[in-house]
Image 1 (cartoon, one colour):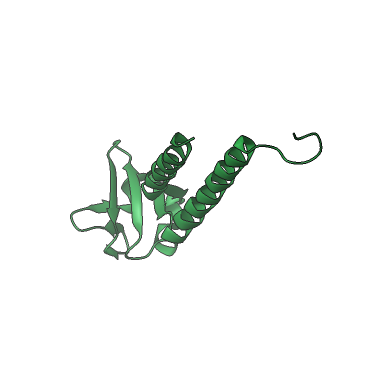
Image 2: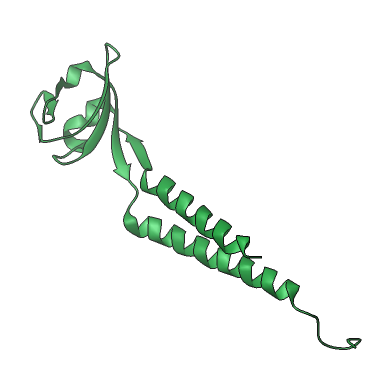
Length: 122
């Protein structure tokens, strides 16, 4: 019985770490680059020659996406995704749900170990 809380807490920790590292990618049509992106967006870019890079945009010029050390011409972009990180609020809600469900499981296990009362008990 003492292992149940440890297992639940370990599960919560693993899920929290996985969610904190998660990000989703929203594809952007290269023809829509100037109107779809802003400075401070994080993007993943694959160029026509196969190079892949991920960086935060510091500026968008009429013909290129500019990062701290990157400058990629719109014409060289084969694939473009905006990186959208999962917010801490989302992680908190998932962790809270897991903790509540874990608590419910612990309660049910504890209740199942208790002697039954009622008719027929002697």
